[in-house]
Image 1 (cartoon, rainbow, N blue to C red):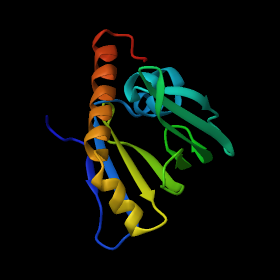
Image 2: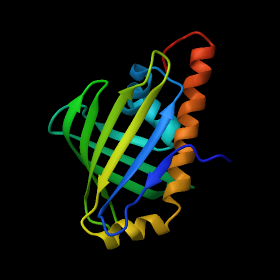
Image 3: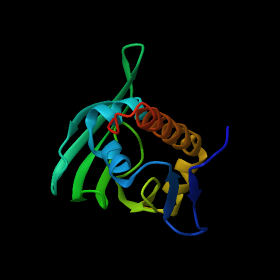
Image 4: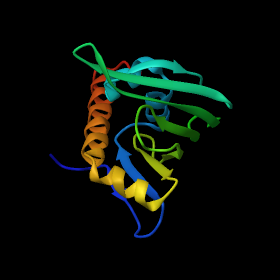
Length: 161
């Protein structure tokens, strides 16, 4: 499988950058990050809460065979439609401290857009620990599902997810 989502981790820095270009108009890409039903489809997780506003909160949970295997939550610090979402990210029941995510959406042309995520960790060690996990493979697979799901909707002529 081709890896289209790129992850850049600069040696000695406590951040990483995730970039991906999508064959989607900007408004559809942004909608995939703000609409709970769409998020559930491409991320494969349950959206328990999503308050898309400054000082709003969010909570996601993934279950397997009836048991919660992943849960995360945070606070939305900035929410500018079709432009950016700044939020905290806390993985529950894990040793990872809260991280800060700057998610930027960029229009490339009428039918393509770019996602840029900057994630800031408490330390380089925590960043490197996350990179040892199948994080890169997982986010690439999720972005591939997002691209395919949205592409099908565009092909089918609905134009919305």
